[in-house]
Amino acid sequence: MQHPREFAFLRSTLLSIVALGTAACSGGDSKNIADAGIPDAVPVPDATSIAPTLFTPRTDLTDSELADQALALMGLGSTPAANNCEDCHGLTRQRMRYWQAITDVSITSCYADLNLETQAAARAAIDCMRKVPGDDNSMYHAEHVGIFSTGAHLPWFDFAFRRAFGEDYQTEYDNFLAMAGMPRGNQLPFTQDQFDIIATWFTRGVPEVDAKIPNEGVPTECLPGVTAAVGAHVADMKINGWQAINEQNSLLMFGCDGAATTLDCLSAYPSYADAGFSSGWSNSVADQQIRILRESGYSSSFWTRSSADGRFVGNGAQSGGANSRVVDLQRDVSIPGTGFYDPAFLPDNTGFMFHENGAYLCDQNLLVSEPTEINYSSDPDCSATQNVGLYQHLGAGVEGNDYWAVAGPFANDNGGHNVTRRDPEADFSNGSAIALTPIIHNGTNYVDKDTQTFSTPLQGDAVLSTSSQMVISRQRGPSQRQLGYVMRKINSTPVGDGYQIELEEVARYCINGGKPAFSYDDRWMVLHHYIGNSDAQELGFTDASDPGFSDYANQAGANIYLVDTLTGESTRITHMEPGQYALYPHFRSDGWIYFMVRTLGQGSEHIVASDAALRLQAAEL
Picture 1 (cartoon, rainbow, N blue to C red):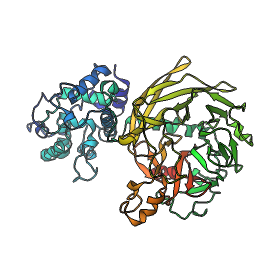
Picture 2 (cartoon, one colour):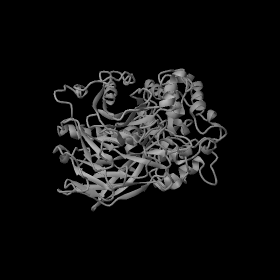
Picture 3 (cartoon, rainbow, N blue to C red):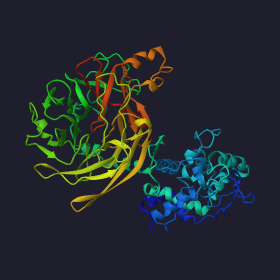
Picture 4 (cartoon, helix red, strand yellow):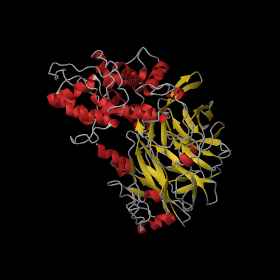
């Protein structure tokens, strides 16, 4: 039986390789890869020619067998194969997942049509494999070929170049082999049978990779990559995620009364310029609106989160006579509370959580009832959840399933009260693990179920998506500094009163910052990053020694970045002045982003809203 993931790939883009039959093997050809093409006697394809098979899936091998054979072929182990990939690349877990991610991208972008029935189709596939698609002078780029670069010398690629370039194909094909063919140097090219094993393992999603490759310790590089699983998930969430659900349920969004579109929401609030801020805060995204929703009147502590409808904004309180506060923007008041920190709101707009010597999950009607203060440990609308640790984040199943909380190792992040020049430490250990806790509402109270823990070595600050189907963590690198983010898919299956859960790494994003937050459709993440010397050029200076950068060097600051989960592309959406710290960004349900702005030397802060994600998404249409 075909592996489920493998089938998912093949049915959408690779079904043709099954229908076309088995290609001829290369027969253990020992020539260098640049000379490993098909003999010149093979005729140029005519209109009736059928493309050979790219690879034949090895459905006869289990995941474990497939992993063993693929890794042995690539050179992992005590007796490396002659075609040893490890001569050039460290065969680490991260490397395998990176190759998987770029392969997933190549499948959808370059190999959607494997039949190559026309010259135009062949030229399109080949053009896709260039560094700059569309530029005939651009070199071929192995990253755009994916793991299929290890089969560049095999019949399908030869056929593609013959069909695309006709009798004069050889020079172009030789250039492709020299630039993008793998393995390089004096290593033997893979036979078709060997390539079938490797290609099958990667299109299955490199199963058993953690079991087969030892923990390599602290990584020294970040290899960005987003697998096809992310695209499938985001496509599903566009229809079935919390943004769509809340819209279908006519959730009334704060500040949207009378608004013709979501972009017209919050128009009653002043822009940052009208509020007296003179910087070019919004100059990074065309037409972006940044609205000042409220001056807090107190100094907050640690992160800020808001309700799905955007009405309530909660954070710890460092001043103002309370441990924490929830701002009701509709009434323009802040509600003091006994909780200390770690606000979180459920994505269906029904509940919220604070920590006060334990986590308390409260009915959101408590806030709607206009309380003058909240005592989390004694209020009947609040329930103690004994299994939920600090720095928790909340989500909810999108098909009526349980609520979820994630917690685990964390790095304190309360910057901007004083000069803060770098992102939080990432001193996570090999023993780091995340804890996932399902929570139900029994009609009266919230009740947490048994917690399950999962090893996430050298990672921490885990954040759950609103759908409870993705979790992202900050990755430790050298000197306990961050080295990007790692995202995993949470595959949970109800079993009795609990769940069977498996975590699958699906992406790495090579940008550094604080704990991110997901949009309600899981398409975007948003995070803050403290300004340091390495940011000088991005902010328009020659380098950190530029006299114009001196105020940043002295006062630092923080900016907000928006990350596209589909591509990993990041966009800075603020340009804060020296001493201004844009912090703790997060989404409300309709796509508006809220964040806090702390300014050195001021005792209060500002609650700010941005439509940057909405603007970027509208620009795609």
